[in-house]
Image 1 (tube, rainbow, N blue to C red):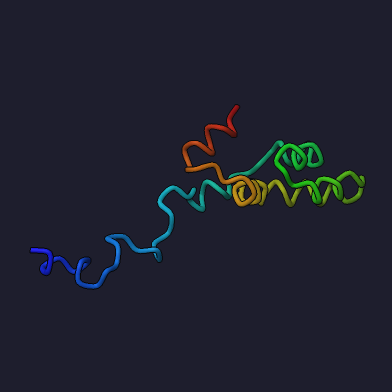
Image 2: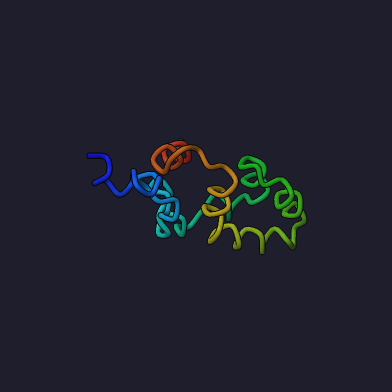
Length: 96
């Protein structure tokens, strides 16, 4: 019976490593606007572990550009920096 199963013949697991992570957030979820990051970019960066960007955004002129960059890319940057074992858990932890 085991010879009939192609996974046993090839020695490959029944799942593929080439498939995208099913727990990863969708592109739509990551493209949502991040308003707190626009309002307080330096505080938001330090709270989410983006220390270099936070240090740069303390400079008043740079703060404006950093805020708008984070408005559109903050969720993606935060997800890449702080992956927490699944989409549902990640977005629930960010709502608090």
